[in-house]
Length: 309
View (cartoon, rainbow, N blue to C red):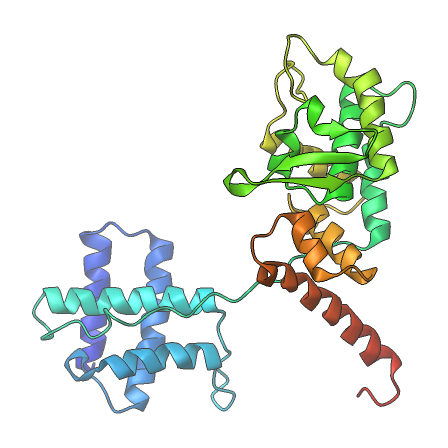
């Protein structure tokens, strides 16, 4: 057993006995620290006293890069960050116990998280979700009519669910077909609303909301007790409709918002216009959607072009 192996064992014993770490946590730490020990061994280091800050930094780089020759796969930034937590804990413990003269891992930063591309649905899938919500028949219940109006509004405007449930009746202008949304930081924006969404809201105000309201409230979307619909309940509305449409996998509170943005860009909308509609403070955030559409173009190109492969 090398000095490093003993130091790792001592640290994990400390985690188990003194810190009461769970079994899954200890297994995860053991896996990451064994990987760290192998990395250091390849560099001729078998004792924490011989580790430098450069060694720790290059370990993180190696985790992200992987090693095809040894069969080591590259880790996601989140997994690499988790491994660094174990390594920093080991060095912090060693320094506190006097096993090393200092903590060489303290200043090493975790890798920046990767930018996750937003998920969107094809138009046919969005329409399936809207149809699955129901609410377009004369016998539809007040809640069903409400659900259809809510989902139509979300897709028509790209509103966040929190913005939609925060709407008051007076925020919707049927004449100009627009809605006043209150976004993050109290910022307001006026967004156009499509005819199907306006029709669904009108139907809700006539046939749905009167059956839900129990007291005076300006809120547009009401729950079964007559109060303002919560964000969690609105998310459940979307999830239920997606399940009815057979599309529950990958559907999140932001699905209709992402689909709204992607479909606009696919249709030729300028990214600055989409930025304003979404209420993004920076166009950089909106440009993530252009990466989605570019990916779709590349997929079609790779399948159709005779010289793509």
